[in-house]
Length: 268
Image: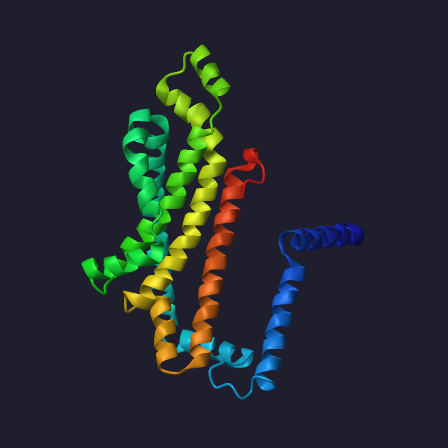
């Protein structure tokens, strides 16, 4: 291979990397880290409740090597993903049933509107009262809260199917199952993907909140324990890890969804 070909290959690789990675956004993150370091060493030096960027990085390293960070990260991630998966299946089935069958809509929508209007955080105390301070409380909360975006996304997508598409199905004499699989589902897919993404975000958030209040395990509990032990560097470290976890799960989901749904364009 000639030197010119190698140069073009390197250039195309760098261009592809630049298109996939938000380099200006990453630069802003490093700038904010540097500014926080400067602030904590100057104007914020008299605050004992904040930690510098270097102290937070050291705390993350120590928690990962000799602390419980790895186990807590696995716990929070597994609860969030399992709860999200269960909520997604339930929400999809319920949304599909409500959207396709009018009697189900008539008898259930009033109850659904009432239940999903209850603030999620208020349900936490009821879950603790019923299940106690246990992993069951965390799982129930994650499933309950993550259910609604998927249910409403599926329901909205199914009911958004235009009448002329259903007329085409009837003209071709498609069965009920074929109509759902070939017309309803492809049309509702963008809404379903959005519901899945919102549910995933809520599952991580509510898993952490439940750990702060109702389950002595996971990243949320570690953050509260560090705060109560007056270890600001550890508390900030947990905050950063939680943020990275949410970002990573969302990035993986978006990547997979784009590969699976190329025919629908940029739907996420």
